[in-house]
Image (tube, rainbow, N blue to C red; front, side, top):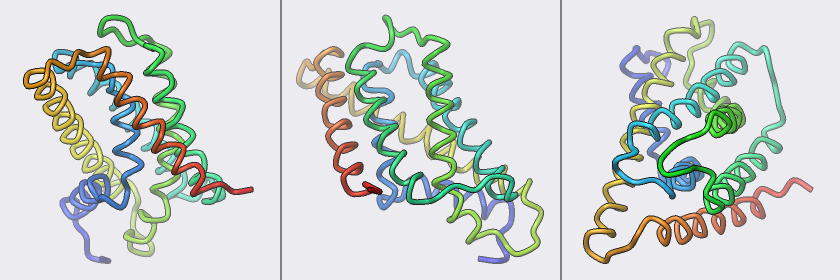
Length: 194
């Protein structure tokens, strides 16, 4: 892994975000978009980009060793963000496809936590003494591309269920938020640090 190019780091970011072993990130995205429809895709992608910005900041700071946190606590806080996002979505933390400034800020804040979860993996693939800027940019770009692909697949599935079974947004929102919250609780119990 020591000879990764820009393209190689981009592929690693893409692979990391779509890896079924990192399902917590996908569940977070599911909770994030549960109350939106395909016509809101642009706004939701901007919301997800706030999340990417958040995790890019902490990943950069941690990769350059400016910040360090216990991985035990980060692994615990990630399911907390999933659970909170699912609960806020179930409470209609949006209005008719609009996303408030505070929703962006909260999502960015949750991204800060998730970014610390990527740190050990990123350090593992970063060659010793390598300038962190280009690999970090490529890795985060790969994560963003994978994240957008996941969002579009989820929107397609939502649209398909609405078309085939008449599942309306409100019912889907409660059902999907409930699934995400349940998975968040399972992850929380699994990562309980006390």
